[in-house]
Amino acid sequence: MKVYFGCSITGGRDHAHLYQDIADSIKATGANLLSELFASTEVDAKKGIGVKKNMSKRDIWEWDLNWIREADAVIVEVTQPSLGVGYEIAKAEEWDKPVLALFYEPSGNRLSSMIEGSDFVETVYYTNKLEAQQAIHDFINNQTNS
Image 1 (tube, rainbow, N blue to C red):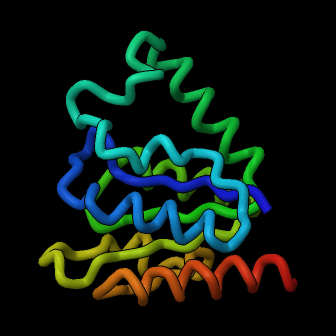
Image 2: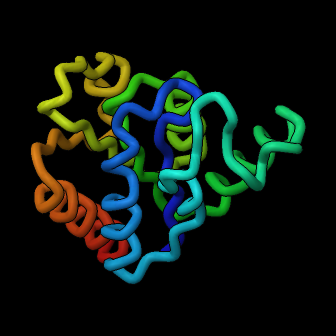
Image 3: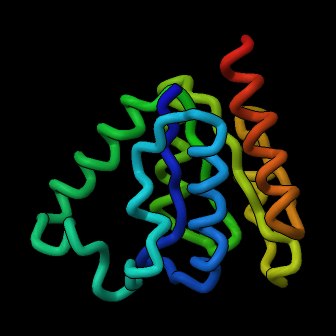
């Protein structure tokens, strides 16, 4: 199974400390994680991602959408509001890709009703790494067993 992982980049990296744990949890299921580079603590909201620094905005858009097209499922961390992640969720829905949205409840943020209210998106609130791991494991198992 191929999984696209989306998280906030230019929208802010306030919760980036959570992203590598999520990426590791996805890989622990045996899934092929297409976008692990987004989880890196090296990613900077203002400077972007090293490999993409010299790419045009159009090239970045195509690269990310190609990953979503290739993916069997999409997992997004939605605690830090991000227009890009919202766009990725909408494209995943358009292309019938199952979506798991993870929201870190202790953040003090509120999740958009456009995500939480969607019947298409499975939303899981988590308070610790183990809860996120379990949600990821269950989501991927449900995809592979359906």
